[in-house]
Image 1: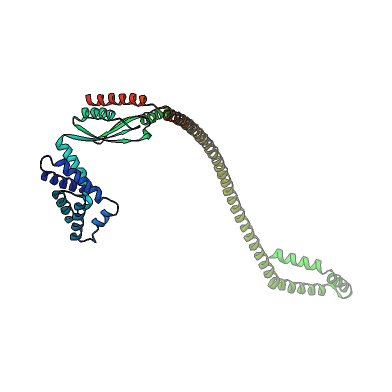
Image 2: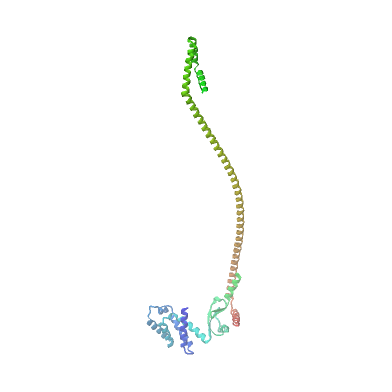
Length: 177
Length: 191
């Protein structure tokens, strides 16, 4: 919970620094930086207390340069390294995305289909979710054959289930009494 | 005293006939007065000696004997009285014991009857409880068995359905499911 509050604070600070129209670009760069740092083994080394602050900052600078990040994102990475918040970078990126979505009136939804959907089907489901959220939906599509048929959607922590697997499970429960 | 002397004299005369016979024989030879005097003095001495030594001893013996007999009698009477008292007490005790025995027997009968009643009631209560428990257990077992059967049937049906759907699922089925899902989202949006 403390980590979550810290992540929100850092994300808000970065978002406030972003110029209008740059939010999405910075968000993408932050996601890349988080993905690079959260590589197994690297995060543990960077977050290790045995590493000096200077070494940590140097390492972060090199990673940011190698990823070709813009100056503000490089600086942000160095600030995280200096303040010993490298371990929070994943949560910061997630919080940043959520705050940008909130600012731009968007919502993210995870759509899970039983079979690979067409673009039209994804758009159809997204439009249905937009009617509920009254926001533009950015869908993340997954395929899970365990659903047997149909689709499920997760939006803002709520799950809308239209899968055959769930219907079958309900039928089984009713039959069992 | 006189009676005693006479008695002793008669006794001596009776016990010593040869003296009298000798005196009679001598009287026929030398004269009867002398013999009589001798016999009289002799007798007086004898009577004196008897009175002086034998009578007190005999009297003392008889007094002692009388005292002994009286004491014995007294003891015997006392023992008899004591025995009678003890017999009375024993009779009273026996009567009390008999009464107590009767009371105990009655109490025992009553207690036995009470215990029999209580045991009977307890047995009836236990039987009722066992019957209820048995009914509950039988009900629970029946319900559990029924539930297991239903669950097994439901599981089998679900597995069959799963296999059928996996084998025969087509794209138009997915389209119908998607239509249903969109209806579900529409209902949610209208709330």
